[in-house]
Length: 94
Image (cartoon, rainbow, N blue to C red; front, side, top):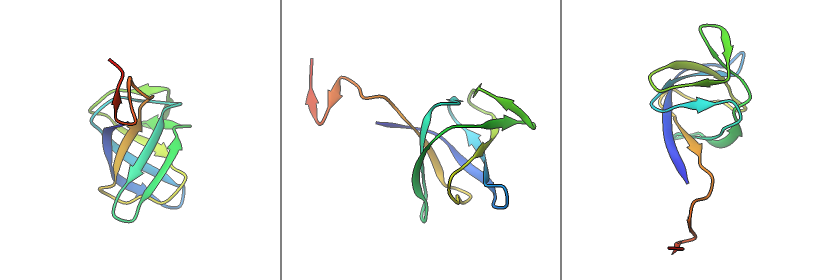
């Protein structure tokens, strides 16, 4: 399962960093999926910065810089990949 976390507002190609407008929290160690018209890849969050200071986690409403493994584009959407839940493969385990 995935939960929408935010979207890309800017990308710095030379250093491979995306600026994200967050709608939900994000932490170092989370696995994220970035999707757009030409973009579709997953990666683990290794490094984030706010105002040029490294942080371990950030809440909704923040603009955060994230080191990315591939090119992203303005408007691409960031999803956090959630751990599996009690409902797997369409079977309810209640």
